[in-house]
Image 1 (cartoon, rainbow, N blue to C red):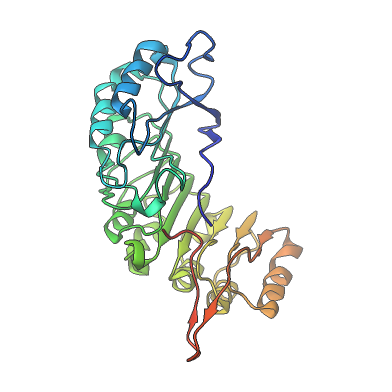
Image 2: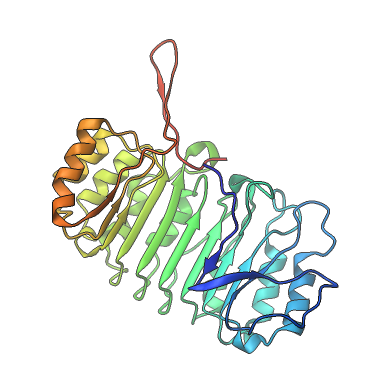
Length: 319
């Protein structure tokens, strides 16, 4: 699986790309009616991102802007968005209504997910205390340290490999309003070096009292993650559990079924998995009669076998 489409919606608003230089601005929508995507080009940009953002600030009534999507920036495969973050921080007083921010909305043709260079995003959350949704794509160079944020309701981190220190940073965050947490843990081949122990703060639920959807997905250690979730304190308060896109086998699914009750869930998402037919039947039989929406679509989870019998299984999103 690759990321081929930009965000179509964000923060419950349709996404709208701010037009390039020279484009007419008289047909722009109301500033608060869309999630504005500010973008440049990774290669041979005619206008850098910071300049595009400056035009945006001078064109749109920024006091009404509710959501911003940071798209491509120049040489994102080699350059962190330090200047972009500085520009956002400098403009924070001009964005009093901002409630959603996504950093790195790039598709494969612009920059592979594991090539996207990121940086410390903690300062963005600190600078916008009213932010309700925050998302970031790309794990290379990404940093998040523990903080308290009382307004954040949704946190998404998409990567082919999420560094362990980022996972530990999320675990250390005090997020009393957070209802939706989505982490793409990834594979060590692309920097995803976290272990199940790094999830302890999340699975205890102590700092996440409002959590209702937990997605720990795209993981090479999905069986271990599933086993840990099955015995976690946070499981009983969830409405949606998403362990999709990873290397989930019968071992992990069995641990889920043998762990804490799952019949209270509204949805269990296990798509892109490596389950056998009998285990799929067991999952459906245990949960669907209770009204749980179960997604067991195998998708493109194909495995390779070497001549010596070694089996290779893959996460959905790597490079």
